[in-house]
Image 1 (cartoon, rainbow, N blue to C red):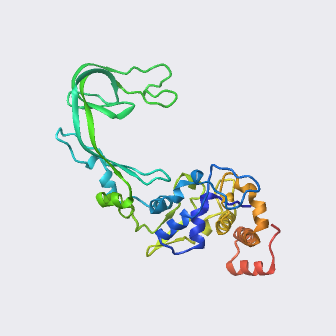
Image 2: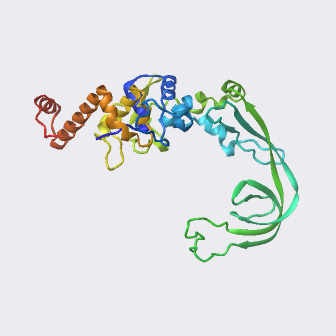
Image 3: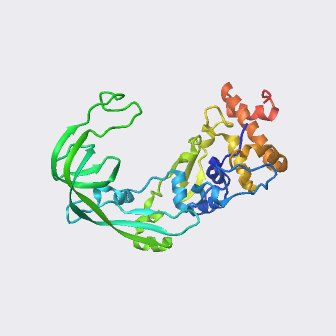
Length: 345
């Protein structure tokens, strides 16, 4: 009636450690070791982990916290990266937003690319397709790679793409791919972007030049509540968090939304949360891995404190579900629990 899951690591931390700062949450997440990739064998230590195969979202500081909690990007950061709000160069061409490539795990260098200008190549004749109808002065974008583009100087021939066998009348093939609508023979001048490329060895160096990328400025940290976010949080949307005065906790409303355990609707429940918290308490990273549930029986035998809390969670969810079904009042539920007047689990 329940299993530990790496998906529930953050809800479990906030449940057992209410009212903590985002920095403290980031520290606690970084101390966990989980993997949806690696499968541990029977007999390996409970605290086994392989650094290169861990779930990366738990080791990305407060940026990772923001993404896990689903914090909204700030309006200022959105404007900073908005393509329509960038400056134009001497040719009247719009510059691209800055690009920051974050370091891979185990490395520290940040690669920054600032688009500072464009150069125009010599006129060349091409035969190409286009999503848009073109005329001299327009910008042509290569259909499969819009980074490759040029200014149209002269159009010699323009034809519409014919509907091909296997497509519908709207030009959509059976496999769902769009086909560019126009074919051109034309002269263009390639647009050659020039970048200011920088390599920053530390976050401090990066933020000194580009404070816009500091997590304090990237995210709307005044967001007061939400659900846990990201692809790895499939099935846990009913787990909620709340923030007050900069301190984060698991929202109590979670317990009225979640089920007693893992259900056929692929939603995690109370017993899953209890077992995940138990795995964190005893640093049993082996449970928070691929097929970690295979080791659950041995874990509960070796750690009776978790078994006791797990059994209580089953009883709580069982009696609560029965009480809801019977539309019992709180006092009736409490009296029934004390008197053991519930059907067998």
